Image (cartoon, rainbow, N blue to C red; front, side, top):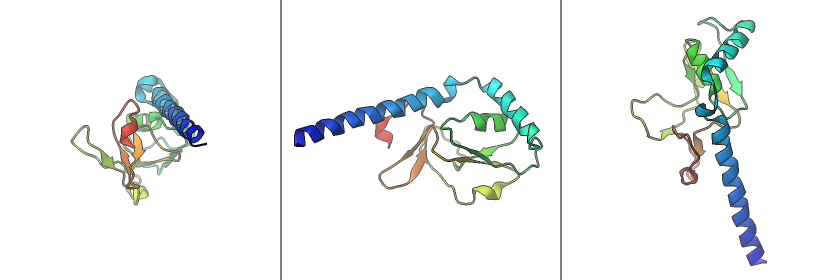
Length: 140
């Protein structure tokens, strides 16, 4: 029984890793034509009446990708998904979600309901963001 359990845990770990890797391959920025996506989103936002810079748009998505943020940014509206701005690259950024709606209408709050490429949870329970473009299991 112990051997069966050990093998099952090992195989489940392999499956989980493949799922995480596929999320990065499918939803990371490199897999998307961001210009075409921006045009499509701008058309959608315009038809919904949220094309102006003073509209109070909140963008909620179940996608792991960042296409919506790129489209919002290319429309001249800074997206805010809880990652504080930083001048340093490669660092881990603790997400700050409380007060996300307080930036309206200057920023467009982005709610990733199922998570986002580059987000991970550490054993301390905090969620962090990184600029990773490939899954790395040791991050969390």
